[in-house]
Length: 250
Image 1 (cartoon, helix red, strand yellow):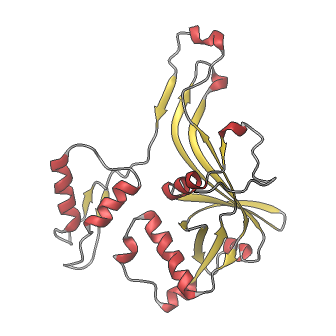
Image 2 (cartoon, helix red, strand yellow):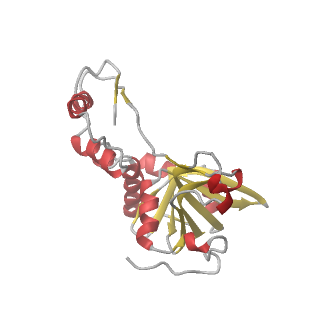
Image 3 (cartoon, rainbow, N blue to C red):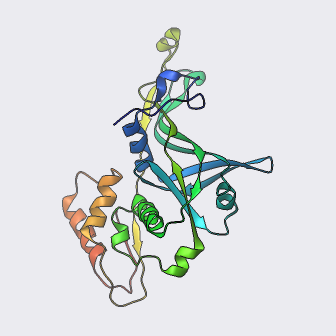
């Protein structure tokens, strides 16, 4: 992929060696995270609002109620800053000063526009749904006319964008390496420990293997062992008594 164009607003001044304008890296971070934070100023008051999002090509989509104050203000074309962060590890140094975190982050600047075209709106909502659970859009009922009317979708072009990444061990002052203090990296990762199956009918379509597999592979949560237990849990997710809640690993 090509490099994103660097602007005065996306140029990194603090630790620029951690910065990146690689489009593939930016999209990888956006596709792996779940939540973005939307920063905007309304009547002189700054707000930072967490929300879900989805990406389709070179566009980031956010959505919500047509009555949302955040979305209605963004629809006016005001400047917006959207950030996404993944925390990969806690970096424990030998001194308090040099403690840090390993992370991957993206900052998107620009102005959002309302998605008026119904076909693009459906593409955006599909991207939003599949971003959380891969292949989910094909499993569920599509939005009806009333639901589409009640939903406001905004498009933010991925043009003025930068990424920032920290990896590796702690970097201590030379004299501190002699201190009898444990130092290193504690890895962190996002896990779904269980899912609860709830329905009100005696029969329902099972959760397909494509959805189960997509959830694990796309979010890198697939376990590498315990195969027999894995298969049992897949069977529970695909069938069983609908009147009983079942907690299963995703």
